[in-house]
Length: 255
Image 1: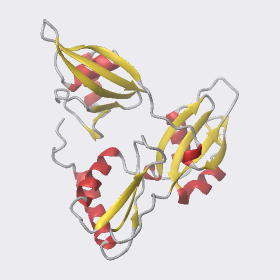
Image 2 (image 1 turned 90 degrees about the vertical axis):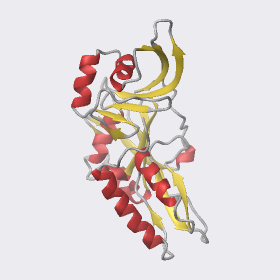
Image 3 (image 1 turned 180 degrees about the vertical axis):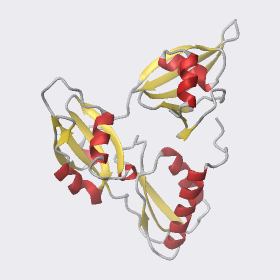
Image 4 (image 1 turned 30 degrees about the vertical axis):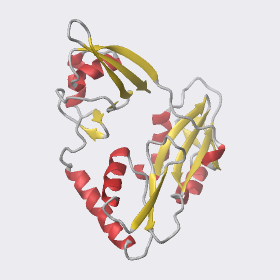
């Protein structure tokens, strides 16, 4: 998928707001952003490359973070990391499973915006790390006492004290007739193309962190495809064609 496709209206509005903030920083101020998704980070870094008198640091709590904050400062100043910390959430007992969506929903229910929360990483059964802005950490720890019906204990922790690692993902190999997004999703999630088309038309598919509505969108090696509520695929490699002209793919699937 081309990274040069036109900006959506929401992206234009976000970039205009971000550009105004950069103008303020050029007046010898500094600026810490909220958490940016990968598409926003791409837009932000593109804008920053045009500002030779500005520097920035990127941090989301750990090196493989998907959602990151920026600390932007005049080049002559000393940079620091964005104010990101971690909340260690622990629970035990019961048959109920506590997953990413459960934790995210519980934190958002406290009245926070999505951009005040970074990655949520499951460390082991009964333990997860929630990356948050430092300014919200005490509030979340004080008020996050249950996830659903499950009691949760929260502790503010330095991210570098947690055993954070990149998701390994499940490797999937197979063939597709073409690199259309509906074909790749069908392979990756083991469902019919007709069902995949309905999901795309229903606004449930994101490619490279942009919502799409066309089942015929052509993908490329290195693209990320998210199916809301189900997981994410990464096209690890395109490995040539079979004798019948089908395309061999290696995918990584993350839940």
